[in-house]
Amino acid sequence: MHFKFLSVVALAASLLATAAYAQSAKDTLTIDLPNDAATLDPHLQWDTDSYSVYRNIFDNLITRDTAGAIVPQIATSWKYLDDKTLEFQIRDDVTFQDGSKLTAEDVAYSVNRIIDPALKSPQLSQFNQIVKAEATSPTVVKMTTKSPYPVLIAQLVKLSIVPKAYVERVGAQEFNLKPMGSGPYRLVQWQKGVQTELQANDHYWRAKPPFEHVVFRAVPDVSTRIADLKTGKADLVRDLPSDQAIALKSSEEAQVLSVPTERVGYIYINAQAGATQDVRVRHAIAYAIDRQTLVDALLQGFGSPVNVVGAKPIFGYTERVDGYPFDPDKARALIKDAGAEGAKIEFLTSPSYDRSMVEAIQQMLNDVGLDTTITSLDQATFLKRRQGDAKDAGSMAFGRWSCACQDADGIIFPLFRTGSSWAKYSNPQFDSLVDDARSTLDSDKRLEDYRKAYEILKQDVPGIGLYQGDAVYGASKNLKWQPSPNEAMFVMDMSWQQ
Image (cartoon, rainbow, N blue to C red; front, side, top):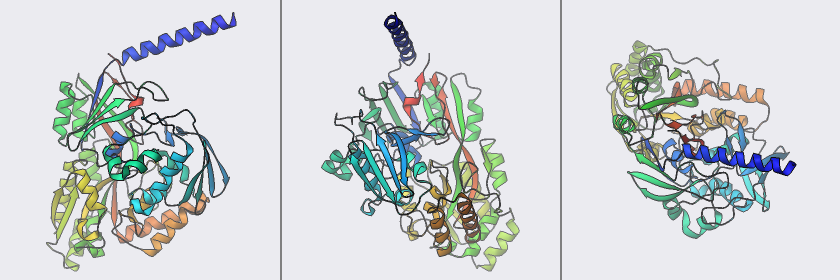
């Protein structure tokens, strides 16, 4: 009788699963992104458009659920052996898309690849506290850090696992063009600048992917993305400006999905080249920007102003450091004192960022006596310039930063610490504070270190925090999906309901 009952339960579960799949019986999901992926190698760029695509090709060591909690993925569990040694148990039932088994060797290789300076990964600063990773058995990985590192688990949520044998065989360049992971989708074709086509991995270890095909298209023009959504050419579009999102709410064909994030809208200011080398010019820029007006007029409820490059969900964020008040007269006086009236300011941006926001900031700067020119670049070129030599990195750039780790270590450390590819700024006192904050498990000391670090950033102004942003998407009425604060566009979390 007991076995008969179990059979009935199993049959019922099977019927429910079949019914759920029938609701998602849509062959192709089409997603419009503002830009093409800059890379499909998950150990290089970590910009949102690239991550949106390759997150579906690869599995991560650990991840966050839709509520933001850190949960297992390739790792089933983890524990500290001591303050500097963390051990992970790895699943033994996962294969890569070529059928080869994923083991602890692949996990260790993925870590060691990022922290190898030869790769020149922009993610290096977020993982460089790790000295080494080693497989101590086929299902156990041990990681050793330079010192106690309180953010290690939070940083590892974005570690994608790559196949060691395949990467070593084809090389980094070929791997970027033909990536292979253990994730729910495999690459079919990457037409650079146009679209990326993925196909379901029918042997995915978790469950059957909800769509047979997924197409990510590069559509820089927001009005085209919205038109695609309304006409059914796209099922999901990323990065809607607030005014367009509000207008879309009345649409019968589409819905607006949004969620507050840890992402910070900010301006980087080049402290090592051009007119902005003068701290008086950087102070003037800070006084010239009316953050509240930008938030009220352009975000319209999809964000809130911040005084620092950080936001409330982030450990280390502080409200004890005041921002610069809007004071255009003081800005003009500082520019005059610096002899910078009419100084040329190149303002870098890309289609990933709201053009109206960039143009409003440009107008505010020109109103106080600067000659600001917007340079709009495709995302790959934008990132290359931002991460390159200071002389070619522009005077300013707009950005929206998230580390998906909810810790200041993943924000102000990579953005401003001397030696980071993002930093066009150097201050030994700041470096010492952020170095100390990432090497102690004392939370109170970390908070105080970050408060002092934010005070230095306020005085030196290598960047200005503008707002905490929401992630805003437009979606078909039939798409069921709850966006997450870490902005992971993971198709396995989606379904289709007629």
